[in-house]
Amino acid sequence: MAQNGSEGALVSGVAGRYALALFELARDEKQVDDVSQNLDRFESLYNESDDLRRLVKSPAYTAEQQAAAIEAILAKAGIGGLAANFIKLAASNRRLFALPDMIRGYREKVRESKGIVRAEVRVAEKPSETLVKEIEQTLREVAGSEIELDLKVDPSLIGGLVVKIGSRMVDASLRTKLNGIRLAMHAAH
Image (cartoon, rainbow, N blue to C red; front, side, top):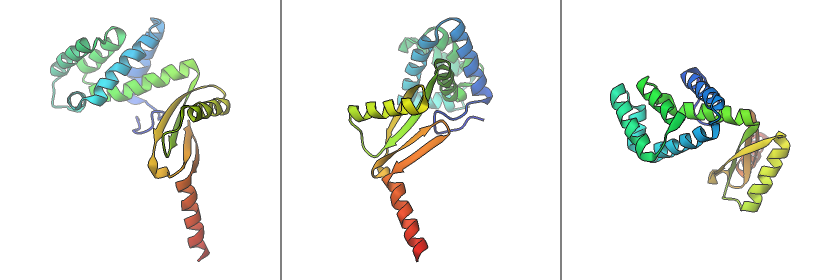
């Protein structure tokens, strides 16, 4: 079952099957990076447009309405090739609702094929470029492979950072340390 949240979460079911099929076709046609770029462009449009999100998620539109709208959007955005055909297929098969998970699943397959590990890092404030490079280098050494860094700023951490690579997580945030002290103080009473 597809899980919401982290991009590293397992994608299976309809989205997983579609993502795998697209990846295998793109690999066979030697178009993996081209498809990735087109899917990235579509996802940017999706994230920026309430209307497009409504079109993708709403069951109120017929397959024909979704397919016609998607066709126009892809043409206007200059998205073509396998990625465009894939998105049109999802629309005609009434599977647009699963498209965000399909794109996420495709990215996972690409990373896996290239030996890239995804690392999610949350920090309290935006770090300098030098610190980002240090974090990337350290994570590369820990993972023993190339990494794709997903850096997020989360002021609620107060300080420090939280790193998640696959199923492993290290929480070195000030918030967690303060909560630990608070719990220890309560236990002492």
